[in-house]
Image (tube, rainbow, N blue to C red; front, side):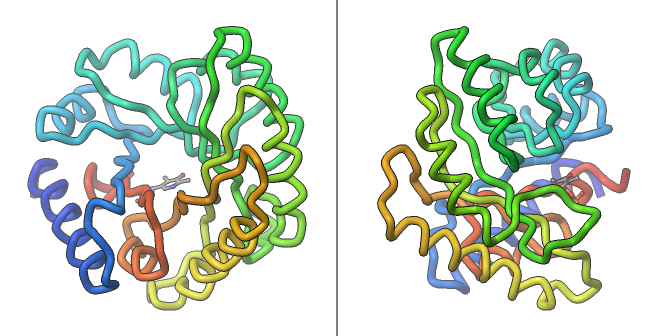
Length: 227
Ligand SMILES: *Cc1c(COP(=O)(O)O)cnc(C)c1O
């Protein structure tokens, strides 16, 4: 299958999963994860109507963004080192992977320098896996409170990467836990911290994530092929 067919198939599945969950298909946005794939494939997806792309590596993102001439929007979704934040200030419209205050403070500083605000998600390691980034479920609320107080950041919601399972249904409890955590935090009505976005679901499990309330699904290999 070609990229445009893959993209269309993923969009169809997103819409079907949303409808099956009693949700509007437009309530779920597709982040096409283009990491390790060339700018030409991003341009091809953009020509087919995809405008939102996710990248994991700063170097790769800045190089690719310079090459892609179409008006696309970039989200940063990978582990982010504070000393590299400067390079993506103003280039991305959302950072999904904020998991510590020191990183949030650096994003605040760099977006402040350019006189703008950055939308961020707090990454939660729901399963507390040693190999994954993210704050714990227990610490998430305090981190949201601290980040919400920073002037150039807007907390938009939460992000998670559940453990890998062959059966996507097995990931559902982790997606559900993220949604419940977001609802708990939303109920506190913390100024500067909205909880309308849930970034969860990848190629193997985005339909399960949508069933549990995902508003942003990060899909790479199902669109661009295996890495
Ligand atoms: C690579 C990656 C994805 C996409 O994974 P696929 O299985 O290729 O869809 C999503 N989210 C994050 C954080 C990633 O690093």
